[in-house]
Image 1 (cartoon, rainbow, N blue to C red):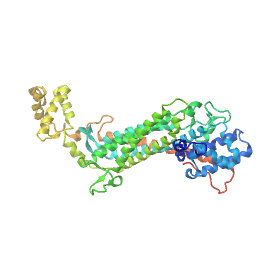
Image 2 (cartoon, rainbow, N blue to C red):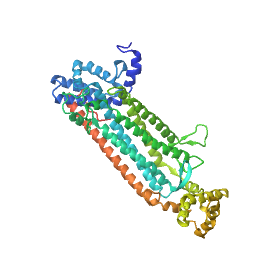
Image 3 (tube, rainbow, N blue to C red):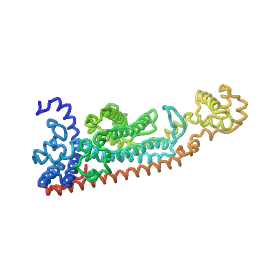
Image 4 (cartoon, one colour):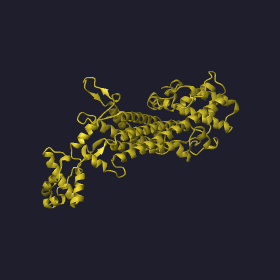
Length: 503
C-alpha cells in the first residue's frame, strides 16, 4: 500500500490523471484565483484568511507545473493541490471548497486550456488556407490533368486542384470557430449539479476568467462532453483533408510522376541510398491524421457512458489538448509544405498532353454539332480513343476522320456523322489550354476564376486568423487582470514577482 491507496490504483488511476497536470496547471491556478475573488466579494471568506489564501494561490500560480509537486501517491490532480495548500496555511485552505466541488475547477481548467489550443489550431488552419490560396493563384495557369481514381479525367490547372483542398480547410476553420464559441463558456458556479447560493451571479466568475458567457444549465455545465468530442472530431477532419493532399503530393513527387518537389527542408535523406530524398513531412502528416482519427474515435467511446460519470471526462483532460496540439503541428507543417512547394509545370503539361483527357469535351462537341445523344457520342469517342492509343496517338491528334471511322463500331451511321462533321477542324476542341479557358462558370478552372476564388479564400483566411488572434489577446488580458486582482489581495511577495500572464 501507498498511504491509503493501493499501489495498483496509484499506477493505473491517479498516475494517469497526474500525467495530465502540466496541461491543466495554469487553468487550475486561474480557476482557484477567480473562485477566491468571488468568495471574497460575497463575504464568504473571513478577512483574516483572505491574504493567506490569496498568497498561497499566487505562489502556486508562479510555480511551474514541473516544480509544483504533483504526486499520484497523494491522489488525483486536485488532491495534490489540496495537500500543498493545507501544508502551507492549514485549515484556511478549506475555504477554497466553499460552493465548489473539485471537478468544477478541473472543468474550468480544461476549458481555459482548450480555448487556447483551439485558437492555435484555427490560426494554423487559416495560415494553411492562406498558403494554399497564394500558391493556387500563382499556378492559376499551370496546366495539369485532373485525376479521379488516379486516372486521367479532364484538363485543369494545379491552382484549381489546390483550391479544392483549401475550401474544406476553411470549412473546418468555421467548425472549429464554432467549437471555440462553445468552449468559451464558463461552468463556474454550477455547484455539485444544481448551482450554489454562495458564489452569486455566475457571470461574475465568467468575466474574471475572460469567458464570453456561462454554460446555462448547471448539471450540463458539470457533465457535458459532446463539445469536446466534436472538437476532436473536427481536428481529425482537418487532418484528414491535409492527409488527402499529402497522399497526392507524395505520389506526384515520385520519379514516375515528377510533377512536384518538396523543399529540401521538408525532406529527409536515405541513410543508405545517396539518390533518395524521402518526403518525410508528408509521411508525418499522414501518420498524424491516423492518430487523430483514433483519438476522435476514442472520444466517442468515452462519451458512451451514463450521465454524471467522470470516466467520459477524466481521460479527456489529456486527450483533447494533446489531440489539438498534434493537429496544430500537422497543420503548420502542411502550410509550410504548400508555401515552399516546387511545381514542375512542364512535366504536368506534358502528362496532360500525352493522354486523352479531352475525350469528354470531344463527345460534347459531337452532341452539339452532330445531333447525337450523349451516350452515342460517348461510344463513338471511346472507340476512337482506343484506336488512337493503339496507333500511338494522343488526344490532341484526334480528327473528324478518326471519329467517322469509329462510328460504325459504336452503332452510329458513319455517313450521317461524316456529313454532320464535314471537314471541320477539331484542333480547338482537343486543345487542353482552350478547354481550361472555357471553364468560366462559377468555381471552374478558368484562370481568372481560379484567381477570383483564391483571392476570396485568402480574404476569408486572413479574417479568421486576425479574429482568433484578437480573441487570444482578450484571454491574455482577462487572465492578467485576474492575477493582478489576486496579487492585490495577497499583498507583496517575498521575491517581488509580478503576476504571471497566461500560457
